[in-house]
Image (cartoon, rainbow, N blue to C red; front, top):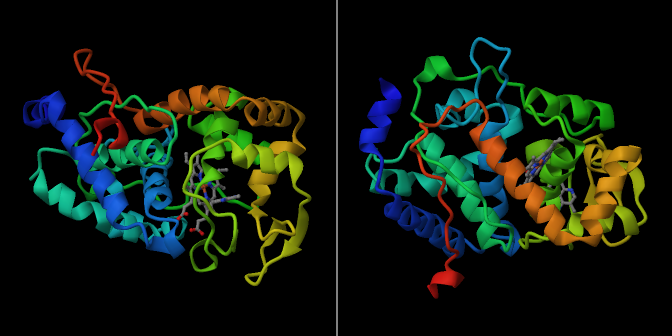
Amino acid sequence: NEVQFAASNKLKNTNYQNVYNDIANVIRENDEHDDYIGSGPVLLRLAWHASGQFDSKQEIKGGSYNGTLRFDKELSDPSNAGLKYAFDLLKPIYKKYNHQISHGDLFTLAGVVAVQEMGGPKIPWRYGRVDGDIETVPLNGRLPDANQNANYVRNFFHRLNFLEDKEIVALIGAHCVGKTHLKNSGFEGPWGAATNMFTNEFFRNLLTEKWVLEKNEAGNQQYNNDKGYMMLPTDMALVQDGSFKKIVEEFANDESSFFKVFSSAFNKLLENGIKFEKSSPVLYFKTLDEQDI
Ligand code: HEM
Ligand SMILES: Cc1cnc2ccccc2c1N
């Protein structure tokens, strides 16, 4: 069946480090993107959006398995505005490996590369996703709305089978990198503070900065501070809800705790809804720095 087919066409384990390195080099070569924030954050968002439309209760389940984000039908979902740039960065790598890697494996591996090359935790990763045809594209509108509160955020992630608050808070901690763009999402900023280093700074800022709720140029409410930082309403929800806030405090004080929970939650996000062959190995990748490249 299809999964066996993918198995027979997959690269030997060692070759995935080569794919990792090719994606990492694309990030290094495109360091001028978005006023020198670079391409890490948008590739991380691509991996999350390729996986986060999963819904086990729907006929068409979504998730990363079928690599459906490659179709314009999904890429043109307003929630995916800005991600075509990230997909275009990966197209030459897809061609180079000539169908030996699926789009789902490529999109999710790009998220692992982005996190690790920006200094974040190691993310375990497995191959074996198989491209589905356009019939497998999930309906648009399954990704979250940033204007909402803590209960909305909790319920959203329950749909993705994240039932523990720790996993939810850790995942949103990915907002430590990159920025919002008015033309993509109707939110602007943070001008000065956008970073490309994966740290627990997002949680520290949530607790220490003074946040003022303001309407932005697109008419959306967002939280701004006096340094040009911003937080989305769904970011701020993490300190408005008692249970979430305790976890924000834990991650703000202990980056290794944030990294540990993020690593397993991000892997779970990228593998939502996929049954891997028992024999399919869990791979860990070295960063370019660790290989002295
Ligand atoms: C409540 C859940 C979430 C909401 C409502 C949300 C919303 C958003 C919005 C509105 C943007 C700005 C997009 C733009 O204007 O370009 C954004 C950016 C981003 N999101 Fe999220 N997000 C959520 C969860 C996540 C998760 C789980 C991850 C990854 C694990 C993630 C990673 C990112 C990254 C890396 C960026 C920066 C992209 C860039 O700089 O181009 N987000 N998010
Ligand atoms: C500091 C901060 C806060 N919220 C964000 C939301 C999405 C993307 C980036 C963000 C970011 N750098």
